[in-house]
Length: 164
Ligand code: FES
Image (cartoon, rainbow, N blue to C red; front, side):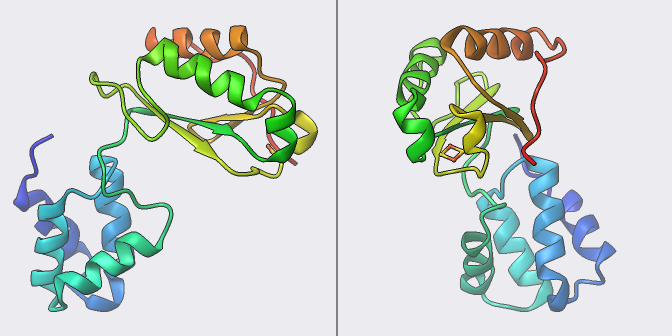
C-alpha cells in the first residue's frame, strides 16, 4: 500500500501535531494501514518534533502496533500449555500448510497473517484460536479450514466463543 503523506498529515493535524498525542496518532495510522509503515513513523517524528528513535520506541513497546504489513485477517493459534497438550501445534501446522506460510508470516495476497501466541486466557476452550478479535474454542483442523474458507469468500464465520 502506498503511503500518502497528506493522509498522515491529516491524522497528525487532527491531534494538533501535539507530541503528547503521539500514541493516538500511531493508533490512527495503524488503523489506516493495518501496520506502521516506516515513512509514517518518520513523518510523525518530524511533525511532532521528536526523534525518529522515540517514535520507534513507542511503536515497538506496544503490542497493538506492527511494523510489518499485516494481513486483512489475523489468525492467532494458542500454543500455551493447555492448548499445546491438546493439539495446538497440529492446528498451527495445518494452517501453515493450508495457507502456504509459516507462523509470523502473511500470505502474498495480503489476506491472512498467522501467529503462534501464548495462553490467551481461555484454556477451558483449548485448543484455542483467535480470528481477528474473536475467540474460537475446541478447534479442529476441519474447523480451522472452514474458518479460512469462510473468510476467503467473505462469508459469515462459524460461531465464535468469547472468552469469559
Ligand atoms: S493455553 Fe491456550 S488459552 Fe490458555
